[in-house]
Amino acid sequence: MNFGLSHEQQLVVDTVRSFVKTELYPLERDLERTGNLPRELGREIQRKVKELGFYAPNIPEEFGGGGLDHLTFTLLERELGRTAMGLSVWWGRPSGILCACNAEQRERYLLPSVQGETIDALAMTEPDAGSDVRGMRCTARRDGTDWIIDGTKHFISHADVADFFIVFVATGEEPARRGPPKKRISCFLIDRGTPGFEERHGYNSVSHRGYHNSILNFDSCRVPAAQMMGEEGQAFELANTWLRATRLTVAAMSVGRARRAFDLALAYAAQRKQFGEVIGRFQGVSFKLADMVTAIDAADWLTLAAAWRIDQGLDANREIAEAKVFASEMLARVTDEAIQIHGGMGLMDELPLERFWRDARVERIWDGTSEIQRHIISRELLRPLGA
Image (tube, rainbow, N blue to C red; front, top):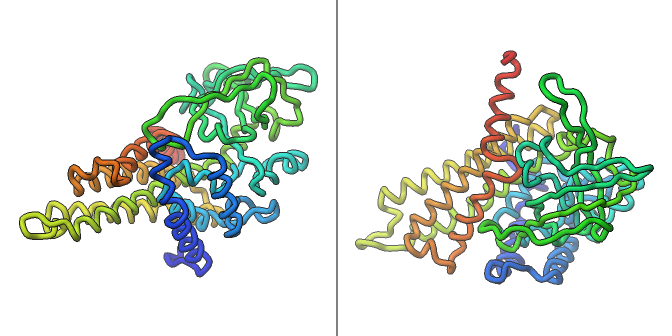
């Protein structure tokens, strides 16, 4: 593994970091205060990103995207992690699973997403099916050449700004190697406004204000068979192929946000005086800084190493899980220590630290809880030994 960045990679880092600081940081306070970003501002962010030539950077060039490799895309996501999710969502990173669309679906869904004309949202989680995805109760049954979908999804991120939805539902059962039958999971592309489908505001979260979650209700929602993505019952294979890297995005964005929190703490420790000395000279503070940057660097390299393995065609399931669990838990510790260094001011909304602290909490839950990541890691270790 080459530990240095190529010229192209450094250009990506510098360009994205500069854009985030100049274009997105100034919008953060109003987003946090109101909990909403006007759609016209979101479209303006889209326009500027497209002018940069960085829109849809994760989609292969053959489909009109930027075609970045996993390592370079992870570097980009790390820089976007420095700002609010309600702003970075407008950068435009269509779900990679759309690359599995057939030719007709690509024209209708993938290409408009790459061009910034539409936004997708992934709908998998349900009230009774979070980590246990096969426990989902949202179902689809055949009716001629159509499918009828019934059920509910919740915690669906940025669904309020999405034009169409990538929806996972149960389409039957099949025998399991052990125990009761398991559900067959299939994937549908469903447009906003489809009869029988309703998107409504979800829950008010303390994490990532302005980046909303929604509840999706399906009541005898009729969807043509042509809008099924992939084969019936094969959605897990699609998810495993295209979606596992989303955990890497959580890790990368956690690193970026931790770097910003650390930079604030370091600058404050170097100028704040108590007892006639800058507080950074006190061991109680200086050792905190040392531990913080060590943890950030470790999370950074775990994340980049996992991305590098994907690019090399190597199995990276364990490494992605390691990066996700370590980086998300590191972010919680770093934001907490950054507040401690600032004292009472760290909890005031004049600084973004209290927001980082709140935002950090969800990173250990979504895209697979810390417990699920540890399950993946231990399973990868034990399976080769027959355990």
